[in-house]
Image (tube, rainbow, N blue to C red; front, top):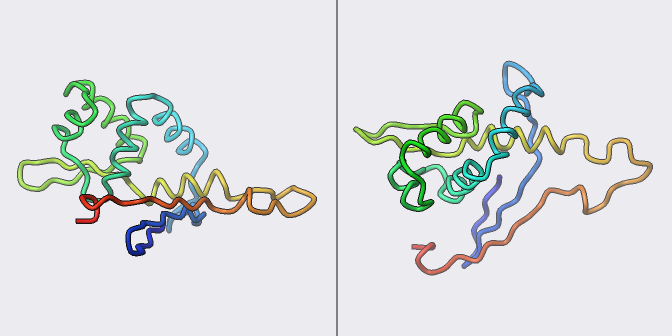
Length: 143
């Protein structure tokens, strides 16, 4: 995801990036595991909340309060997202911060869209172009 700032707008562009890393291509089993992790309502909500927050992440306590999820349930879902490679965790002192793994997220998007319209008789046009989202920021979000 590419972020560009303009006065009071944040432009988010989903740009298909190569879905491979230095060592190997993303395997379909990894894609299936990631999609399966997101195919549960609570995990999808947690992941979307973490994506909104960005690399700073949230502590489990903060996430639980924002999403009204109990600690044991949240712990289970975070573990599943982490196992699927969608979430990273960092330690700061005695606090754990969960944040989205943007590299994995972009590899997943790249895998899903890499061959868009590859077998079409003519160009797909804008339907196959990366999505661009224009987000209005409030004063509080800009500060």
